[in-house]
Structure formats: C-alpha cells, structure tokens
Length: 187
Image 1 (cartoon, rainbow, N blue to C red):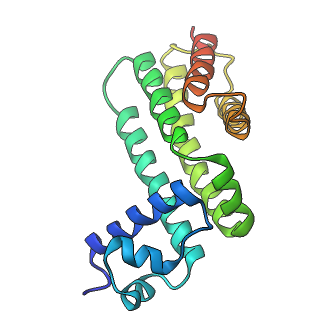
Image 2: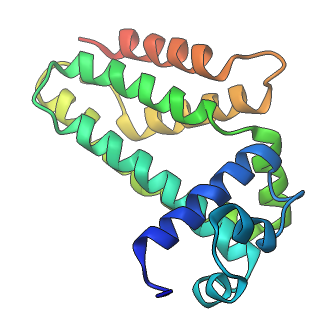
C-alpha cells in the first residue's frame, strides 16, 4: 500500500473525525483508527507518527473543507444578503458537528492542536472580512461597520454559545445571532 495514496489518507481522516466526534481525544487509539479504516499499523505510522498529529491534521482538514465550502459560497454571483444568510447557515451547521466538551478535552491534552486551529481560523476570518468589506464598498452595509471588529465579536459570541450547550442550541442560536448582526449592519 502506498503511503501517499489520497484514498488511504482520506479514509484515515474520515475515521479519525468520526472518533473525535464520538469520543474526543480519549477512548480510542491509533489501533482503533487502523481497524476502522482497514489499514495496517505500519502504514498508518508511516503516514502519521503520533495521535496528536493525527488529530491536528484531521481537524485542520475538516476546517479546510468548511473554509472551501464557505469560499465557494462567497464567490457566487448572488444577492449579497442571501449569501450572507446562507453563510450563517453553513457556519452553524459546521459548529453543530463539534461537541465543545470534546474539543476542550482535545485542546487541554494537545495545546498545539488548539494553536493550529486558531491559526486556521485566522484565514477563514480574513476571507469573511473581505466579503463584508466588498458589501460595504458596494453600499450594502452601513459605512460605520468595522468588519474586523464585527468578525471578532461574532467569534466571541459563537464561542460563548458553544461553551454553554446547556443554555444554547448551537445551530439555532448561532443562526439567530448572525441574523441579528445582518439586520444591524444593513444599510
């Protein structure tokens, strides 16, 4: 089996993501990934040598897929506000897949994973800031809107929603929050 085979790597990441969704960082091993993905241990260890790197690579790949879906949405030639609302739906759907207690566990056990995710989010936020700036230039958004501040504020609010699943519904409340922001920044 070739170690650079994209199908094998995709299968490894898919099974790892399922394990992360189910267990977080604990409750599974690299052996579990091998069994679930149907590959030999030596093949996995030639591709990725430790669990921390596997988790980091898997989460970054999931973030990249979401970022690509968001990029595709933002570049479509559609009504600005329809695109903005669709992006809110896409974001809330992505957020709903992750359990904060499992992510917190991963971040505590593997701080490098949290740092890598935060760095990946910076690129995502920049893309969205650029989209909002285009809406501002087109006269669709209030001129007083500080897009970077808005993105940072939305991020903070979304994190608050995620940190309190006993109070908030990640999908519905994130969409409602983003709808409030959209209505507030319209010209």
